[in-house]
Image (spheres, helix red, strand yellow):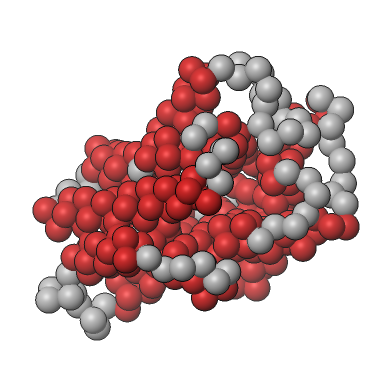
Length: 314
């Protein structure tokens, strides 16, 4: 299937079947990438791993745009949203996630990061003036109970700095993704966000390189077949293709379908981490995943209902 990044919100001519196929690919590719990222940070320092991954992803998308003759510099009006999204959706969360994977299991991390939709409602209340409904509060409460179970306060070793750092990093990464959503809601730029994806990845990679030089020094890349395979997957596939495909699907399919479908990512992340890394799938992890997914679904469906009520023509 040829990838077509154009000036519209999504690629014209894609049938619903192809769009759902794209969504399935994103769910599988991002789900399986959790254990692959875990393997990656065991061979290469996390910030350099994140930087190279995002740079390769940007090259993949820049290549497509150049091939189609659509490669353009962003206009001045787009630079504010471009830089802020590059920080809060690319550089900061990927740095935290990749570093956090040094301390936590991949499945546990996937569950923590996927709590992101829970934080959108309270952030929108404080920064966008949106009402925080009882349904949203209920969804947030369910998600917080799930996170509490995942932490297991009764059996949590508060003296274990690795656990504290890992869980803290994943939680902040989740909030960072939510901040990016709030910023995109306030976007006043000219170009559709999908056109800015390669520039977001590129700027994010530059920021990650700076952070890596400061905190990790010069890179020591093990040029092994395993490392090359991990980078080949994380760059063009999990970063370039998946970011493009997810935005494409989000702009073309009903938001409810995309939101519900995305819940497959942490489920597959947990499953593949168990199968590929031998991580133990505990009852508390399953319970936490179910509660967080229920909370996310409650918040997402309520937001979609309110959006349709305010604009019934869409």
